[in-house]
Image (cartoon, rainbow, N blue to C red; front, side):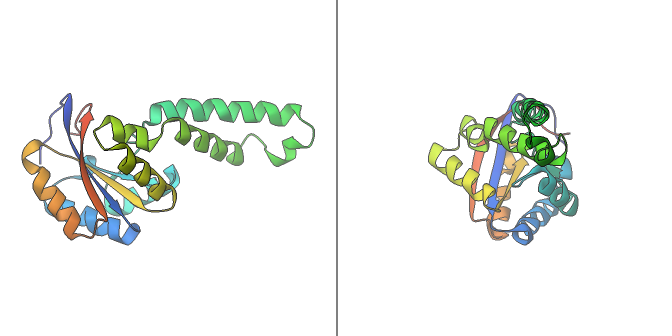
Length: 178
């Protein structure tokens, strides 16, 4: 499938209970001839996303999570945590500028660039968006498939048949992969 750059296009979203179910969903999408650049995986954290994306021949869902804002807040919070660790006695040994600070920064960043906010801006209802954000935080996975108008129904059907718990279509504002 060839994608061209577009200002707005459909993004088919599907929530899966676990990595095996999400992998079935990704395989179903690949069988439709849709390539890895059009499939995004959203998980609890970026480490899981990267690992799952590699296995599913997809991309990590950073763009779906509004990660520009999340990254800025995450970097800022890591610096703040690092400064606090050097100033406050006893904290430096607990929160060194390193992995823990980075993880805490990522958590703050995810809260700042909430998945539910991105989904709502795409047209997913507030209640469903909040429910999906909570489900992802608890370990479920969200697949986002960048599409063109004429393929939405077949993508929805393939994801449902692969075992998606819920499927919705959002309107994505931005470039299409490809």
